[in-house]
Structures are given as C-alpha cells and as structure tokens.
Length: 135
Image 1: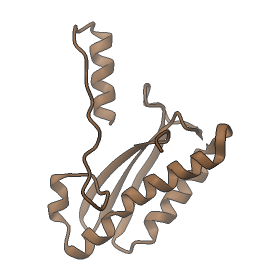
Image 2: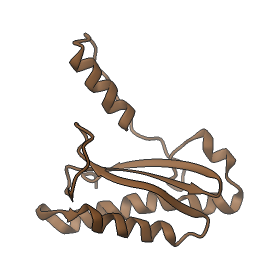
Image 3: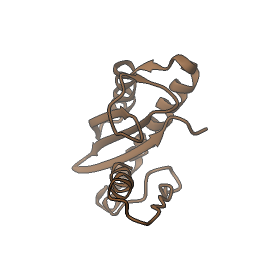
Image 4: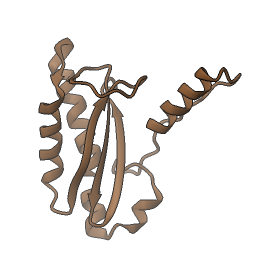
C-alpha cells in the first residue's frame, strides 16, 4: 500500500500524464496475503499466519464500533498486539495507523484511516494492510 501511495504522489507531483491503478490485495483462502514469503512458513507457522488478517479485521471492527469519534491509535495498537500475541510463533514488528494520502501517522483512528503491520511468524517477516473503511 505504501509503495502505491508514493508512486501516486510522484506521478501527481511530477505531472506525469498517466493514471496509477492499484489492484486489491490477493489473498489465500484463509485470508493471508498472497506472497512468495508464504513458502518459507512451516505447516505449523502457516496455520498461525492467518493472525495478520485477524488483526486487520479486529481493528476495522473496533473502528466501526467506535463510530465518528474513532479510537486513540495507542489503544488500537495494544489490541492488535494482543491479537498477534495469542499465536506463539507470531511476533509483532510494527503496526501503524495513518492517513492513506499523506502516510502521516494518526493519533486517532477513524474510518478514513489505513493500517499497516509487519509480523514475524517463525523467521519469516509477513506484511499486510487494511483500510479501516471497508465492510
């Protein structure tokens, strides 16, 4: 997501006569983002890797339930960390909530925010992202 945002901004700032089209993330049947890194996961790790998607959906649901007021980012980060922590092979590297246009971090997370996270499952670093505005 972040790379696409940077490319969109560059094309706009440099007045390139083109339109950037960003496709949605392709996912495995269990929700894990399709990635060549998934091949490095053992069967046990693969079973736990779905926690990335679970964390994204948990955050989105929490933001939806909070309504227009949103939630403090620190509070939501703790909830995501606790979700990841329920899987013994998974270790959170980072989670960030930010403005999808500027990529600036948000102190309050609302439905206009985006989330990115990186999680080590075993020795494999996996990344995922989610809009807080999708149902």
